[in-house]
Image (cartoon, rainbow, N blue to C red):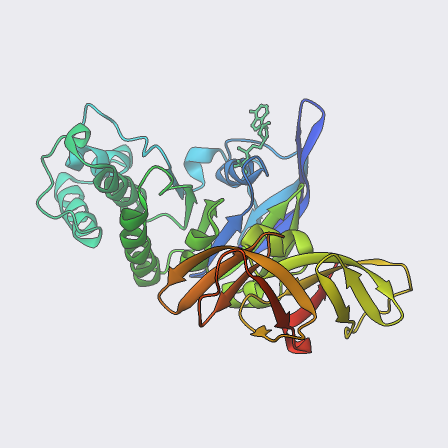
Length: 334
Ligand code: ADP
């Protein structure tokens, strides 16, 4: 239904987006995930019609959106800073778009009540928005965006200003609301936990391109590159050199068992799982324990060489430790 094809955009001769293509299907929540400055908000603004691409197309059900101004696209936007109207109460904010559509007063009242119920704000009708907490204000913004029945919802770091526990609650609600309403959504964030919690599909943006896309579990299990693995904090990335079927690294030598063909002397990135290693006195990977943190299911152990492992028992700080790394625990990444 939404289709972006080969989108290019630059600012001050600096290319920002260089050939972005993706689709959003009916009822699907797609998350654009990438570091700050990777062009996520710009992509949203292009879809919304607040910016124009230099090249490429935005289509909705086949229709080219280029000649359609932002206010006629019927796409809803929710921003980090809520962008509520401070002089209007909750009802006034949620009803705003409906009044612009000249709907009868009765219908507006009915729709506002339904929306407030959906976002768990029934009873807040006459509250001033400036008196509400951040989480409540964001619910009002969501109710306002949903009220006009948009055909697509876009979220730009909507939970960025909220603390962790509030974020988790709102994420769960947002997921419920998106599934209930079936409105397709594009959700922009630099926070991978948020992305993993909300997305049916993740698009990872880096240096102007989508470097990987897939379901959260798929992206997590098979990062497409060392950059992706590092950005997502999946496993340990160790760089080494191929010598006679082994990879020599500063933390040990590993057998190379991967589907790529490698030449002797070639540099490779290995991703070593944080979970699948086993302590062994003759293990091939070694390091000195720098930090041990208790977690619900064991201990997170950081070594002085920066590698991180999850272990069932706590080693001592300062102790040298060795691990056996089974071949299933190592992936070779571009
Ligand atoms: P993200 O949402 O991933 O943080 P943005 O899309 O906000 O990234 O912006 C990426 C970069 O593009 C910014 O760091 C800025 O340098 C540039 N940029 C964005 N909008 C403009 C603009 N209107 N004029 C000039 N440069 C801009």
